[in-house]
Length: 254
Image 1 (cartoon, rainbow, N blue to C red):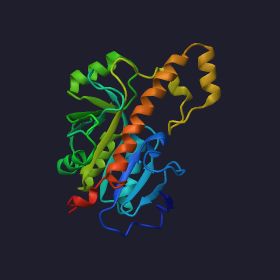
Image 2: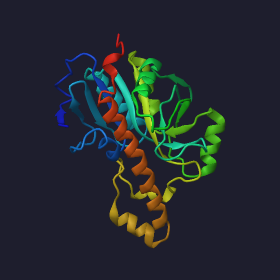
Image 3: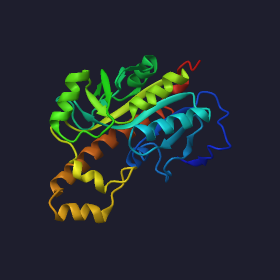
Image 4: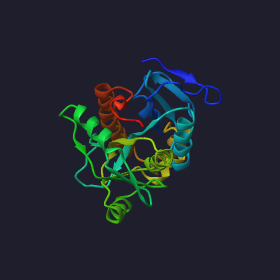
């Protein structure tokens, strides 16, 4: 699938019904396109879809969503991985939430969400409910369970709340498509965050230093890799089944 950079400063999208996908991690973006995608640039991945690799966090996601809307995108998708808050969820399960919680309830375009689910193959486990948005990474089981208790959410990420807020303010459709990467009982340790770039890439020297100090163990890295593999397999299947535009052409964008 070809990818072309669109200059956000001087080229607005002229097409109707263009979906903008926001991904925080490069590994998530690769599920949409195998081509290299630069950080913080809007790129064209299909006639009816563009992608913005934002990097992790609330402000990064908000900047991406606002940039996409400013340049003519009229439907937004939060696309990527999430941590489980429900003990029944496993890596690779797909969360298509019916509500986003980020200190307040934010809506999802239910018709679009439901149509997307109906297009997916039966072997994918899909759950609905509430997706919580956290301003910080959750790095232990207790933090996850506390957030689940406070919000009733089944999963958590850091970006969907900000993207949903932009969609609400703009009056445009929004969905979140999030594959579980880690179960409730496992979370990446806080120490590893110091070795991770904003797009999810790893600084090898810092990671080796953490392993030599035994702050991070090889078993932890293997667990993370297995979870990411399962999540990416699911996200890739979503794109293969629905297209990069996630079938937004069937949704009324007015």
